[in-house]
Length: 132
Image 1 (cartoon, rainbow, N blue to C red):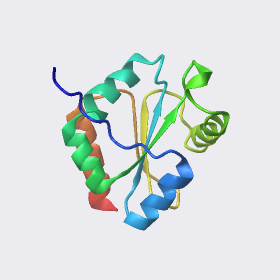
Image 2 (cartoon, rainbow, N blue to C red; image 1 turned 135 degrees about the vertical axis):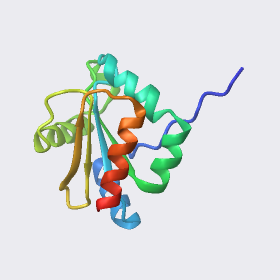
Image 3 (cartoon, rainbow, N blue to C red; image 1 turned 90 degrees about the vertical axis):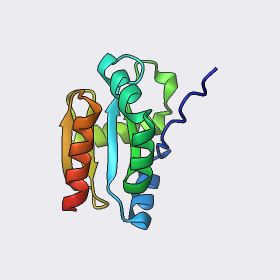
């Protein structure tokens, strides 16, 4: 049986993501998702974030944080839920999935709303990395 690809490393909290981004001088990718109810979110997670290409790319260039808004409230802690809600408000997220790229000061470098083909995300990521 084939071994499932190892998932990328999502930071446990937004504070940890900011600290890591500062230490490694990388932008932060925030993935706003409804992991247990949003079909397009699941598609992006499966086709982009579980690909070996993205794993290699993200390890070299990004710090990752998943802002999850599951319907099953037991999937995330109340602290994480509060943190994610603050991020949702701050970055004006009204649709899922949304990918937001920010710098360590929290400034938006780019935002991509909706589900796209993986190649479209790479163009978006590379453009931001090149310009920042």
